[in-house]
Length: 390
Image (tube, rainbow, N blue to C red; front, side, top):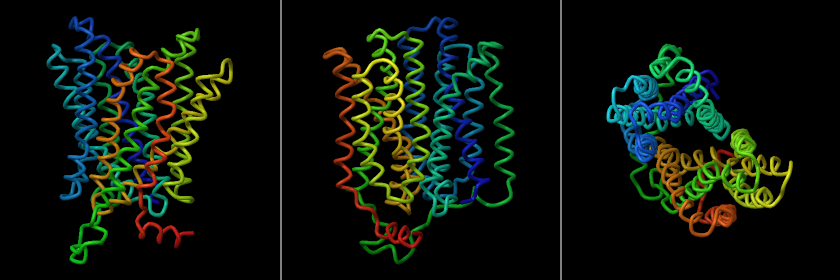
């Protein structure tokens, strides 16, 4: 495991997701400035989600075919510049365009960075990926704080404050001794042209993993969207409900780090199964119990749900060793983005059947993810490597 390059990519992940995370603060000010409707505000968030997540497989596909190490520093600078100029937008259309451009930089950064993490992590790919994923969670967590500090403290034009730390980080990445930006995934050789070799994509296993990630993302995004409203409906103050959500997210972030490390020892599928079966228990207790136990179960359920977050990324890369960029883009982008769209379905269910019943249904969804692991076949080369390492 090459720690310094991994640290630089980790910091890049923190920064780029924090840069996106300032949008809720900025758009709140721009709503009054441009006299926007709630639909226009929601459209900005949707555009950022589409350009930053759903098209990531496209950038991953490119990264598997041509050298794209430059996607990492350029993606950082591109996103920081677009979000930095957002506060200077003279009208709504310009702001919408800048948000769309910012998403493109993010979409280029993530698959290529995840490829680099895979190549730099050695035999500890689960741990390396978990650290990278934790960087994104941390970035999203501090994004609103950064936005509040800049915009609420110094005005909308202060969004340009994103650029100085970004330039410094980009320079550190570019001038770090070594060639980690130039490392690429293995290219198929002549022996890979025949059926049954590593170049053949195991579609059944791949589809199963993507479905697992989509289900988990649906539950995750729905919970963080509606959990404060659920607890407020139970008579818990909104401030306390928001803190319960923070506990849910924080425990999930740290559990994702440990889950990735543990998967290097006991296997990826086992972590996914344990996470998927334990989560419904803790989630049900969180919905049922009252008092201090709600906080405990919120943390436990968040930890259980996100323990397999980085694990599914590594598993997909191991299923597609010749297509690391595409594998990363599928999980980080397409699967997560489409799962997030399931929030609309959750909202429809809440309107039709009530928020309480909706949460009970969502608590049970991960059981289906555990069932889907039956269709995942771990590549023999991976089993052999783990046996050698142990």
